[in-house]
Image (cartoon, rainbow over all chains, first blue to last red; front, side, top):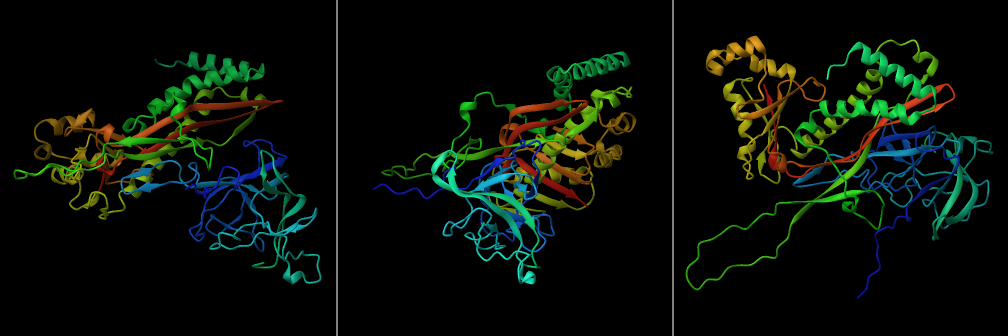
Length: 190
Length: 309
């Protein structure tokens, strides 16, 4: 009996540099290992920040600079696998991410698809290292900007919606969210 | 071939001319030729596991969930052995299966170096040395370091049992480095079910001095005198090849890494050999080196480590 495939296809988790891509040699990128505090496999397009050990954890809060991941952790250029009787030398687990202050427009599959997005909506990415659904996933829910009535409750803002939801450029049945990455600090832990 | 000062000056002039005339490809070729020579001579892991160019790209595996290149390699399957049986007894059966393991690929690259071309005129020293040696050596060091890090993780840890063999293949040996303890180290690999003997030993130059200290009664005969006079010059010693490295940051003092026959270790490939990217924008040149390689340890039986205390 035929069964539906549950493994992701190439388009399921994707980050695209829509505008401002100056090539991998010149883009503002950062490479680091994933922290062991993140208990799920990191997907391309998720938002991360650097922890005090210089490793990536999910989302961004407070004064954590947001970055957007360019690889899926399980892909063979990142995932260093081993068995009882073999061990990969390369790769070595390094992940590269686009820094939020890069002058680019991005599109990502990693956003809360239950919500609607309008141009200029502010985006945040929850820090949730043990939640594979929400950890580092963009949303416009509960974003509190600094210039609000409650600045003490301001959340770290990591993006501004440009177009909103759009078709993936070469997979029309996949939806992406187009946005400009920015960095606006939030209150501690928010 | 010995490189003379005249060669250096001619090379530098040719390089400056190539860059100033906008011929980036020629400039890259001038350096690329020397780059490959340095790669062959530097680094130790390539002397142990040769990095073979992957010429048949059809071997690259495809996946539904990603488009990153990787290979699948095969290794010798186990066999169930033979038994003694009485009459009227037929054989048991098994379905043939072969073991496989993946080889993933990555780029190893240096940082981008930049220079105003006018400032190149002020150098008399060998620019080839600046461009090629240091950057390519960094690539080699990265290969060496990652290979040893993976090997150490594969062997679990000092005096820890490797699950596949049931033997501790990374051992701490007391008594310094003498004739007896050196043989104990060489025997680690032979105690595994794979029964390989070491073909290569990797140590650093400081550790090698412990062997050069061996007196006549330790070594046996005039070899002690020869080592004192000439240092360690032997292609093989104790029936193994010794690779002596100055990279003490990778190979610690008083540690020996043992490697079995080449076909017992694993696989290493080059998708792109070390290449120089060079670009000129106005008066500025920029360049970096990169390569595209993959490597896996395919079997723990051909690996062992000894720390001597």
